[in-house]
Length: 350
Image (cartoon, rainbow, N blue to C red; front, side):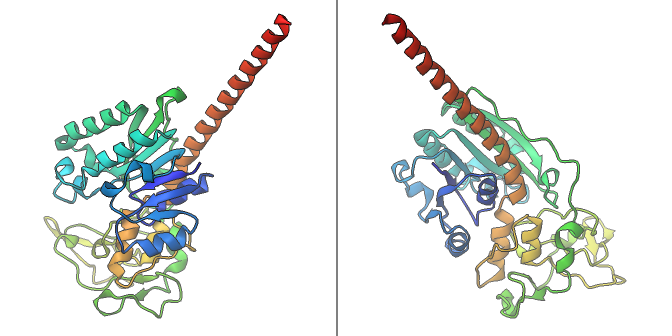
């Protein structure tokens, strides 16, 4: 059996699990601007485009695991943090509804660090209790993707549950000692990026797919912080909006001129520009043969920023794959031993 992917987006989480040896048999994504990208990059997966609310569990195939990150805007530190009061935050309950019905061996859910805010503590506790009540041994941890071969500081909450009858608890992978930088990720792309066309429509002159960057001004909020990381540092978090994409490391770091106020350094050796969509894909550890399909560049940044970094997903999936393999071997050994004992008992009776 394959895995079921919920709230799939463009499939970063899916790619990490595929890399670890799993297959994705069925996926769900309601946002029509993502469908072409998902289907062309995951041709062997059936994509259900209905709202998860409208999908009966009986329409979803049996599976070995369920993966996915319910929409995170309700919990984001940058947003209103309405949490479970927002209909998008309540989509966690749809995830649990399907999990309770399908009863796979495991599940993995991902969300932003804002879900850990004190104002959401009761809601989060309720969600974890519901996962546990569905028959799963649940573990949760805040991880920085940079600790798992991702050239980016990106804090995310990971929730993993193993079905109770497996008798094992998920152990989060150890942090990696070597941590990649922007130079490791995008150094070879620096001279080939193109600006988007007027109104940020896609530039058809690109030689490298998706290697274009958003044009336009920078908001007061954007200019309230330094947005430049050096080549020898990891990127800032890649967000789901092009106007908030980090500045390319070719430029000097911004200068603080007041409280929550920065400005660009006029002495910078190279101009300030946002990271291109392809550079953001690299920073999210997508392979270069992964192509985004869109007309408006803002949709590309949205898909990238909402994705789980592939290498983070891979690090988690490797642990899960190893645990499942070990459990299946134990089940097989126990069955073989029972069969052998039964055969001996039968012989003794003869």
